[in-house]
Image (cartoon, rainbow, N blue to C red):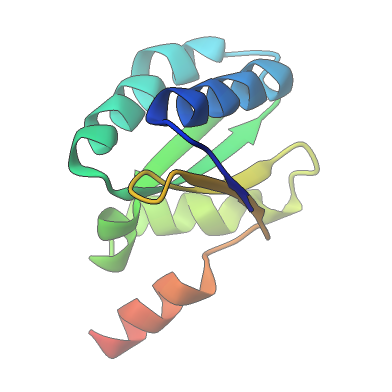
Length: 114
């Protein structure tokens, strides 16, 4: 896990990871997931990001904890995609970490508890 001094540094690290990983459909990142990241930044939420050669996905922790089924399905689906890289970005603590593919364990626990 890497900690950043400012939100701008964290955004820059995420942007670099996206540019390095996404080869096709960069518009997924540019038109959908980057704006979602900016919106989540205002609320200091934790977000989960999947970067792939062919696009990206971004979900907030709250969406997944609340059982957003499409997001949960996507988090689980790309586990077999060797180009998929999963990240957790804590926009309050300014941390970014690469995480194992699939639905994160803390999300599974929250769903089970609900």
